[in-house]
Length: 488
Image (spheres, one colour):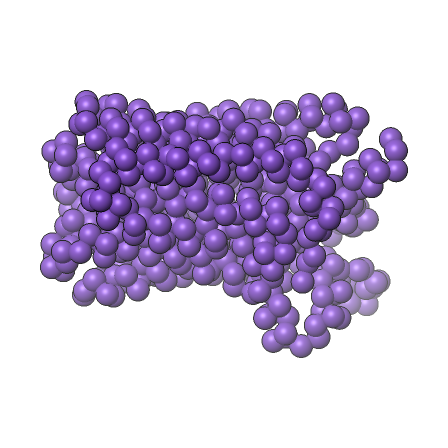
């Protein structure tokens, strides 16, 4: 291995080496370094945050089939306002991570996650009691802020618990929630809204979110390495023992001794990380566009199948099954191939790992997105049998997993354990802005262009962006060295 290869290898594994000196520290026979936790405990913690990350995005789309009933109760005739009532929840996803993720890096994953989970549940109760549409929109936004914690803190937990060789599998498991949840939501919501009324959608959410929050409170465990070491050092100080353990955030505290300055630095950190790296910014914009397409579908498909195909509201949510099947196939494929592909590419590169290897699967997955929109758009335009547009959305689900999971894992790898949650927060904030506002253009676009050319326009835009992962896979290493990630 030459000097350049050694330098690249050292850089790519910085997040492991940063904590290796503490891996032998034990407290009452419990390993302090979370990467040394027993495998069963790791996957239990991962399962809890994955369930939370499934339920929170599910709440984002569960109202979609029942929005017509909500509009009828509140005398709303604007399709754009109806769409915003659904997508405003995702706007909360864009705001929450900027505050919650830096707090989790400073004060611990679990205390922030648990507080946000119960905050999320409270606003589901408020939504169920909404007196008008304006209050419902506000309550949905606040629920989204609380529900956003799991999406970004989950990325930090993955970095805390798993070494590079296992992150692909862990992230594939975690990705199930943010992508499959919004698909399951309308299926459940359609039946609840039709049979029990749209308010019962939120009563069910309140019960489910409170239950999941309580389970995580009881069985979740802290994984932030710096926080665990700080607690251990504090205990040693009380017992009069050796307190010379170095904690990573000691450097940050020394640089910013004022608490307010540390907080302001923390909440601006996610966007500084994303905007400071051309690679991360380009990947963020690409993933955000694809994510916006997902929520554009969520806000328009119900109207298509209830009006054009004559489906009752309770069955309208079943139209999302095509996307869901694509997600499931994509998740299985990604879980089985991600880490194996990285291992194979590392061996072919003389044993030197590069984070860009994570993006290999994106190159093919990107092609499935435009194919799906051409298929879905023209089959809906000509009102073919309902199964045809539904099947046409399966490639979109498969392609989105193949783009979403590798890019998120790439963010975790290049930012390291100490900044993974902030890096993911920046990614989530931007993509959720697209998810909140891109759907608002859907109704007018389809009115002007029709389903065929409207979806073809989206397909051509997606096709034009397909070279993005291939270019970064090929040239990203050089750009990353030229513009390194600087942590505020």
